[in-house]
Image: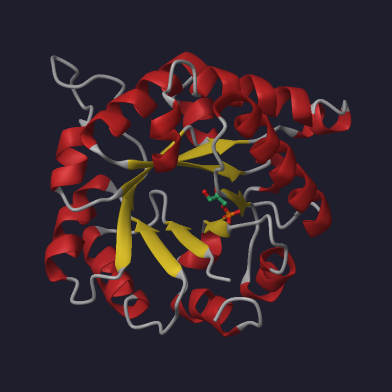
Length: 245
Ligand code: 13P
């Protein structure tokens, strides 16, 4: 079954480095969907220079407003014109460093959907919440808040990335079977509210060596990868594993 593999480069590469890595990734032979998310400034250039068009581009964020006097913000319309098809919204690093709450995230989602971007909405619990067995209630609050007043038909353009905060960049991952269960929980929650099926991806300390552990589960539709997506050797190995062809 085809999966979605997303590379989130965060703020780790320059424009030149992003272009070089994107060109290498574009040569990977796979039936799976690859989405590369460089910084804003690299999007347009990569879109113009990339020969293969079956890897997709995504932005790492978008503004919560359409246009206006919002110094430093990037409008969804500009993102889509730059060649991106996707946008990551609500990443825990933005929730933490930019203090994005569910209301801001909800506005961002609406702006992105308005211009036709496909949204990858990130949700996940922190370590204390996990220890206090609050994962499900945290996910529920995040999902309900982020998807408030989103229309059923718009759900077609939304997928969810489950990224436990404690797993990001830590080398620690939850058990894949647990992630599969959480994925089912998220899908059921959204189905109950919207009567729509969504894809759920997992993110947090994925490397080539543990990728197939997660991808073998039917309800894990793909991976959102940070660190390991910056290294071509490591990233390309993911596609050589059993479950991603
Ligand atoms: P790492 O793969 O580096 O843990 O990062 C995950 C992530 O935050 C992807 O969005």
